[in-house]
Image (cartoon, rainbow, N blue to C red; front, side):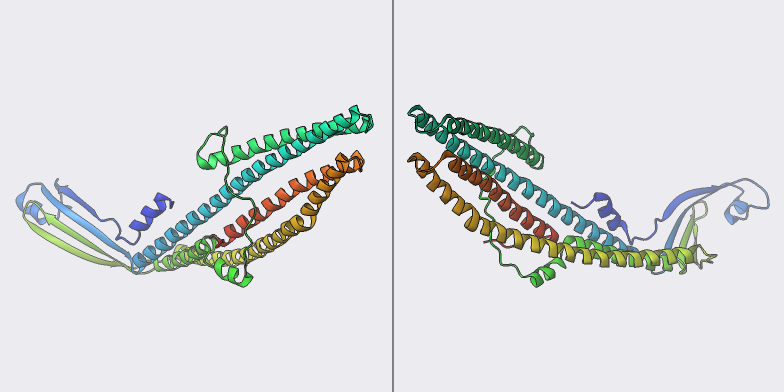
Length: 369
């Protein structure tokens, strides 16, 4: 939302300078009294007056344009703030979703460790495995329990981070619904470069440049002549006096130096705009590359790392149940799958966060399937 102060300043810009209206009186004695009504009637005189100045010629339109550019800059800044807030909300949401899935993985790993522990106990009782295997199974179950406690704490933290954005208390049991699997978008960098030119951040900077130029023009117009109108109406003997004046400023350096300062400010605004455009193009390149690389990594990770490891763990578990494989091999397979599942969730989260950052840089959402 645009600052109300900026909005009302824009509404009042370009108006005529404030007029003054009032009443006056004249009385006393002496040669300084030149009012004819007073000197003729030998009584106090009363009158009303109105004074109105036009301001330096051309300045009203410039003030109006300057205020409009300032208002446009404020509007674009508000849009950019909204985009950044949306990114923060989406990041917090996906972290909560990842936390929920991380908890599910930890519960699944704990269930598997408990099952293997029961198998080890049963086989130990009949003398099929040494006590060392039973101890290792218990240690692995305890490790899975600690990982579950950590996942529960991380989930509570993710809820607490999202709650303020939703106007909820940090203790609120928030639940994120959806799929952490990121969409595979077909993005063309040149098309994204065209989109970024319409981003609120660049639009705000461009409006700031235009406003700075108008301020420089306004400073130069302070040396223009200004007209003023004065009207006096006598209340004692009804008559009026109308006075029109044209004032030409005589600058001893103040106006010229102010104009030079405003011109320098306009050049600085142009330089900042150019630098911001380069910076945003750089951010776009980084966000684009990060999204593509993270998307490719998580896809390859699932197909070439996680799925083969899970298949290997299933085969190893079957072999251990039949007594064909030692517990040490099963333990290694279980730990590997446990670690890979958590890492895969992190890689999915990385893609979502990279996509959020890309949309925030563009200042607009991307079309998703």
